[in-house]
Image (cartoon, rainbow, N blue to C red; front, top):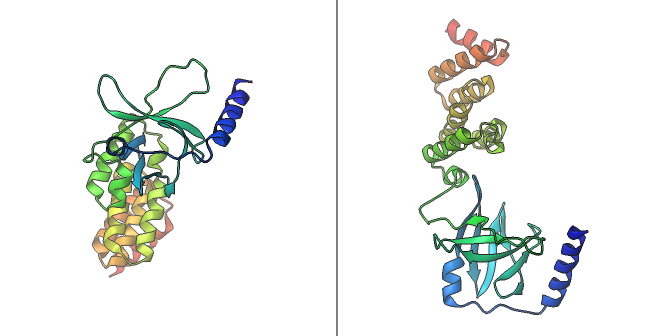
Amino acid sequence: MKAKFFIYTILFTIIFACGKSAEYSPEFVKNTTGRYLFNANEVIEVYFKNNEMFLKWRGADKIEPMYLDENTYFIKEMNKKIQFLKHPETEVFYISQISEEEKAETTYNYKKLPDSVQVPSTYLKNKEYDKALEGYLAIQKEDSTSAFLNQYDFNRLGYQFLNDEDYTDAIAVFKLNSALHPTSDNVYDSLAEAYAKSGDSLQALENYKKALKYNTGNRRAKSFIAAYNKK
């Protein structure tokens, strides 16, 4: 019942808010512009264009929050009602979710990040592979089952590079994957293939041997090693 009441309240507020427009002060724009930590590997980026607020999140570059009232917005892509708050102790800005509970305590959900701090996915996108690996290893230390560590996601990215004959980046991504999943024959098989296609048969051999170590039935590894030994 409470959930339905909250939904109806949101819908009424949205309808009532239609036609309203925000007048952002330079101070508000300065304080709220930036990246907010959504989780260990994702950010919400807030920016302004022509005095209108927009968000970037999960591949969407121009999410437009619906202005409800002073510093209160509804984000339909997140299905959340939010506001911007400064923590009274740390004086750091947060995006705060507004709870459906009538007397819920104020929460500080998504912390604004300093410009110098990046999440691993950003480093990966920028091809800063050492920093990306450092970040993913930190996530792995906290939660070895994290969805952000899925070896097949990294493998797909590596093969995108490999299919474009971008061997340097393909090898870098496969090496990152092997560091995160050192007992998977699949990661070494992919890394070996990238080395082989780049012309480095010695490194291909070494990685096919590793693949065979963790999966004695790996046919491609067996075939490559046998062909190499005949040379």
